[in-house]
Image (cartoon, rainbow, N blue to C red):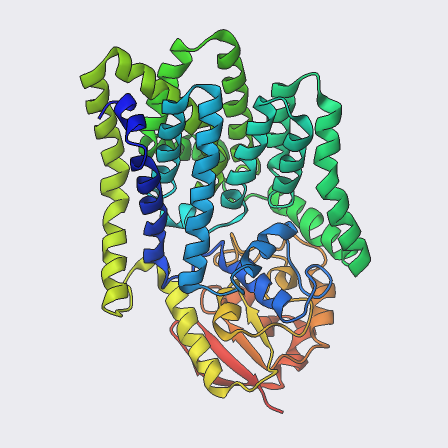
Length: 477
């Protein structure tokens, strides 16, 4: 089918986008790291707690509020919400590419975004961490910037900032597109931030927000566990480009053929988005989601130009390049779908910790009574989702208590945060009903019994169960 035939068949692209978005429903029986943290925050909010003031939350607020929309639940409601979000993002990609290039490019951009948010590493594209949640406001901000509507562009960039601090790069892109209309852009950007500030001050959460999001976040960014960050960056960028070779090839064709002004704006957008990926020098796969929108928009134009000039060769090359991620990541959807239909537990190494958390939650639920509370030692926020419990103190995982972030605490005991001892003192005044230790069996150096502030406190708990990766304790009284 030629691009023009694709346009004339008006129903095809929306149907394909919807189908690809709904494939994530195959993951209904799984909670992924990077989404369960925000789901657990939603559980705390629904239990009447304020983020930053009543429980530690080191991310901007809109990530947690997104998951409040499904009541902090996993399963089908979560995946339907995520699929709806993908459809919205694809529509926005269509709008940007249509206004920039034309109707054909708009439809191709929507298809490309749906395809590459489906067929890539599941841990990167299935959970809606801040990087994924920023896709829609990112595209919307650029759309308004291209239409020379600076206040709206700034407003969307400000909303993106309340999802992910890397939205400052989106703001910079809009600033380049809108020059010299920087003042109304800044005005729009500040509006949602002022609303968030009023809420933080009104609820008494400002001090916690400053410490948890900015002070902890700055330490997290400063002390990367990656030993050779630039070699890692080159390797992971090449890996990403390999699976997204259709976008890379399409973008190259576009840069050769498009006009000077379009080339300059597109280059700035891609460069700033890649700079956001490099921030913190971790190069996690989900960080590359910030690079996805500009690559999709550029590739949509390149694909149209290539198929007009070299029709059969271009179609053959595009098919081959798209088959690589399809063959690599497609079969897992089939396997998970069969597991769901047959009510069979998935056997997949990537989700072993999630399965262990389900088992630990069942043990806790057997003993639990209404009003019971929970502390998770380690990084297992999915336990709050499965038990529907919340903590009875500010702390609900061990990161601010050991000072060791979750990206290294399975193999390192070296703290990066000086406030951990103070936090342990505060924790020792709390009385959670249950403690689930999901860390000690991985890293005995972070056993809670090794901390003097917690030894007497832990003496009030007894072991009531265990799983292969977790120890479950209940308060004796």
